[in-house]
Image (cartoon, rainbow, N blue to C red):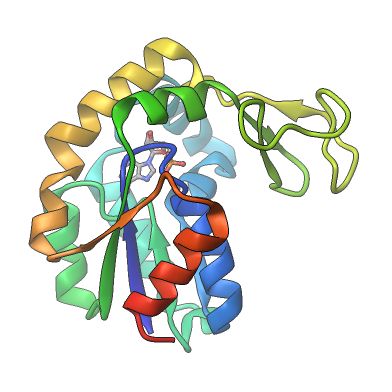
Amino acid sequence: MRLLFLGKQGCGKGTQAKIVAEKLGICHISTGDILRNTNGSLKKEVDNYMNKGSLIPDKLMLKIIKKRIYEQDCKKGFILDGFPRNLKQAKALDKITRIDHAVDIDIPDTESMRRLSGRLNCRKCGALFNLATNPPKIMGKCDVCGSILYQRADDKPKAIKKRLEVYYKETAPIINHYKAIKVNGTREINKVANKILEIIKC
Ligand code: AMP
């Protein structure tokens, strides 16, 4: 099964993609995570776009995604989280694969700002925390592996504002392109996950 999770920053795409991918035994592909793990000569260029809240050029993104979806672990299917980010990427994706269901996890802008500004990440194991909704047991430390937590540079207020602007201009039109089904992303994590599973009939 090939799924696409859409929604503005902080809507819970990553959290939901993890839950649903595990449940269905398919692969979770987060382009944001792939980019954050970029090494070598591309790292400086990628960080420069990301830290400002701008999109990485389509050409590079398409190269990354074309390679990733054909890897062995994607054979049973995948959930795309963070791709496509604009209509050009969507049309390029349509040429190489068929998407079975697209889900739009909907939250208001105020909730997006609130969630992103409290978000903390573990660099080592990838666990996500939120000062407002899911704080770590020990301040600044990961509950799972004990590593130090950090705030993404693009979760700082100026970059959040820019990312929301980019979302409305570039990404929101994709919702119509895929006739994505809307899910209320302000509900509890498990309720949102169940609703998504119901939509895709699993
Ligand atoms: P995310 O973790 O999905 O919020 O993505 C973080 C940042 O990575 C974005 O603000 C962009 O700078 C970059 N990024 C992730 N996915 C894409 C994409 N499909 N196209 C362009 N830039 C992307």
